[in-house]
Length: 206
Image (cartoon, rainbow, N blue to C red; front, side):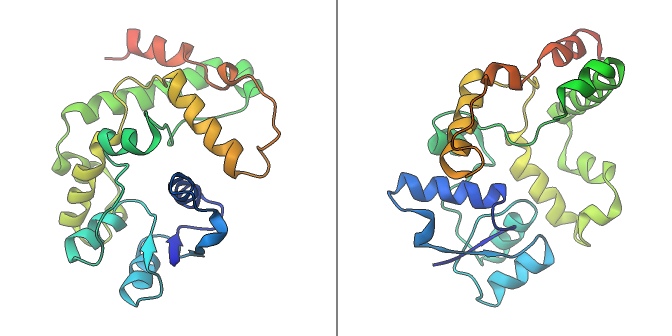
């Protein structure tokens, strides 16, 4: 099958590799095609250039609403994520080099505070609130679609900002299995996440 992903080697490609591996299929048993995001992704499936898609919001909500796709695996929800990975699977995170953290602790804390405050706001924010808060170009000319995508993806956001050790291991295992640069990597997984800043944010951010 021709499977559309944002780009070869991207997170959407790696997710599909994982899905296929669970079905005892190798990545070479599908043809992965980079289709970009938004308009180019929509065009690829509507023109029949691909037969399956591994993608992000708001593309998925648009294709669901139009009836162009049937969702088989849904990692926008905790239930769907756990069904696939056996636990949570952190993806969108704030990351930087250790030496930046050491040289700029106040900047690091300010960044984490902003992310944490946003997560707290999202707890009660409605799709309308979210649509009103983002730049107009994010709406892709279709506010209702954006609000639908916000509603569908909201359950995937953390409320605490803390990454569970089991979830960290899940991601590491996936990377080491499918990323050639990671296959033989040796590292201390516990040192790849520093929760001091988010814990401080939880104490101080209102």
